[in-house]
Length: 389
Ligand code: SPD
Image (cartoon, rainbow, N blue to C red):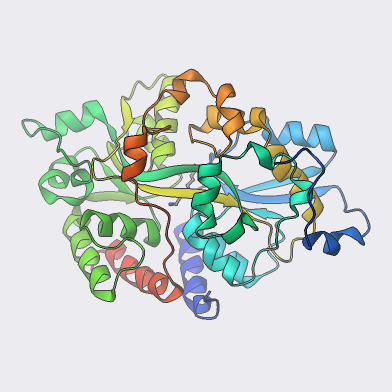
């Protein structure tokens, strides 16, 4: 289901981001609660039965949209992307045509502050009561009062491996104590390059992990911190085979690569896909002892969305326990819905790299936000890192 964006498109995204980031410094039943946002929709004629959604690839169950369309008569156009940079470029260019977008927490705050989203009408979100209070609290750090954003799924950045291939490539060298060594320490990467190392193709995620490995601030570093992260990255650059994001799932599942820096949810999905496709790759999402980097991908309604009522109907539908549990069961990402847990497959619920232990949760780097200037600096350094010069 994933869509590979061409490098050309990606570069275009980066250029647009760089050009405009400077300007953008940027539980109740199905019918209660009031909010000023209501006034903007109440007087309007009923919306046409259309909804345009822009979400990450491999992030939904096969029947989520079909069931929604059948139940509501609303026709959904569902498009996918693989990087926050691409989504952000579209949002700041305005008129995206989308009614729901799903940025990650560290981008959503900047977009929210830049006036790119509209407030939720909680009177229409009667399934809000199903959401986990702990997650809402975490989200309030970047969306005070939980007024604009609803978590879709959450996970953490980490290292994923094909256990058998990695052991074979390392030979006598045992697996390191610290999983991050597998992608940031040349002692390991020089051996693992033989079976294929991939990195996410996105500046923010790559620098977050490098800074974390160095023990530097993950979101609020100085230019010197970013330079140190760049220097670290350049040491392993010759050992990296490929930069891809959505494509990591199939690369791991088919045995094309053996180590990836990416999203834990996608590594578990690669494992699931390998079982379904009978490719028999032994894939694991590692839970680093020093912690992974927690992220939340959140639903938001663009300020200029043409179908905000339909967007609310969809968000409320997603907040139904059975609907969100079905997505978790398909994509192996944890959801923010407390009431959904009983519908999550035991295999997923008991997988300690999806639903982390309290001890591992405590070690995660909590969501943060890089400012626009820092994001521009990362994009510049990342382009150099990727080109390898
Ligand atoms: N296949 C779904 C991927 C979702 C990834 N979200 C991005 C998180 C950025 N840290």
